[in-house]
Image (cartoon, rainbow, N blue to C red; front, top):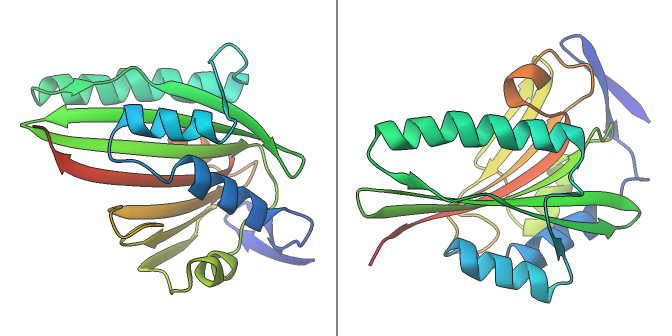
Amino acid sequence: MDITRLGDAEIATVDSSYPAIDVLNAFREGCGSVENQAATAASLTAADWQEGSAFAPTQLVMFLAFAQETGGSAVTEAGGTMSEMQVFKKTVGGEELYVVLSEVEIDRTRVSACRLFDMGETRAIPPETVAEWLNREPTKTIDQNGVQITDWEPGTQAAHDSFQVFFIPPGSQLADIFKFDGVALKSDTVGVVE
């Protein structure tokens, strides 16, 4: 295993024991449709994800509360609306994964997002693995100060605006800012409200 220092946290940059491709495939299958929250929820249900927030771990509950309060306030101030977030759970390759769906509408513009979390995970999904999986290089990579964020535009599908892969190692000072540590994936779309 190759260890790299990111700020005050050590992260494993290569660890073949993490089921990265299985996690990426499960994300693409469940979050393949992000044109709106209802369509994504149906896609997740069809892919055998279990809906319900009662089983969400404490760290995810804290993330949801922060996102709903902070995001909701910002959206309301801008004259828009924010949906109630939906949570889904599935075990993939031995990893307990959670997906959070959200949707914002402001000035007849809708932004739908699908986020996957592997909370507390200590192994990163290397950007090279994702680039090979998508068959294209990332648009942007940030790899410093206890966080790794890699962006692709468009996302996993041409209709998606973006796809991001996050890794915040446990112990990173930035975990307090992002409100989680571990692995996260995010797809989103921007569309017109009809």
